[in-house]
Image (cartoon, rainbow, N blue to C red; front, top):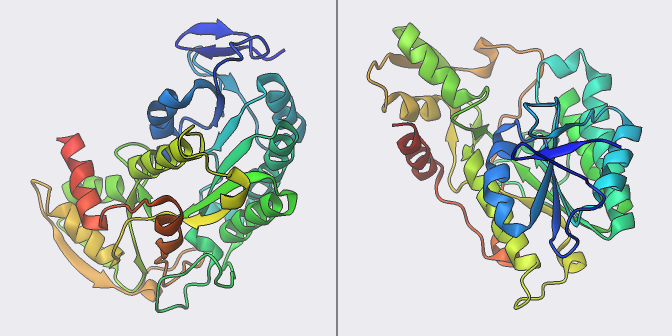
Length: 317
């Protein structure tokens, strides 16, 4: 049996207190997972699995191993699964399509199958990369999907696998995620601003940057509604895909300028085109997502992207 640990204490995943709701968090190492670990603890007993066995804090789970996924689900018997795991190396995915598919496409379907057996709720995170970026107005959940590369294709495969299984699930599409840890645009720009006097940033791609902490907090708000004895929301009725990003839109160029404005050393920021900065994987030119369905269903609306950036940077200072 896989040993699981929480707060340095070994717990038996079969014999934990059944009076408490059981929440399985997958991938606490990532940007969203790190905040989910901290935000979701009020909802029940958290059982945590990650890419590696980390200092006795959680068990290891290889998401490319179908049997390992089923074993963890059987042993933990969760009421809620928070799948914050993903293969997110967009360019590298062009050369590692099989691994990206295993983690982004196949694993979510297996999680959905096991969740349905347990009558559990699966929360899964997806991406704006399922769209081709040719829109000129915010994408809705019902708009046609057409990924441009391997990463988007595998993430779409995961969405479709979950939909095919059915059951209780929430697929939350987000975009342009950043945080004060990990690898992301915010930290890259902050580092380059210290090293260089001039930065050239793509100005013809549009999106809505979102702080990963806000994604985690919104997730907990949704779950609080679904499991509230007062609201008694039907989890099957609200199952589906939802867009979850900050309000407003910007470009990478304007986003970089907003970041650098808070730096002590402020290099020149020059706009360039996507053609000036070729990458192995093609990016959507327009990644703005409409959050109207999320607001209508759950009454949740994130702040503007620039307001969220201000909140994030205050945590850094």
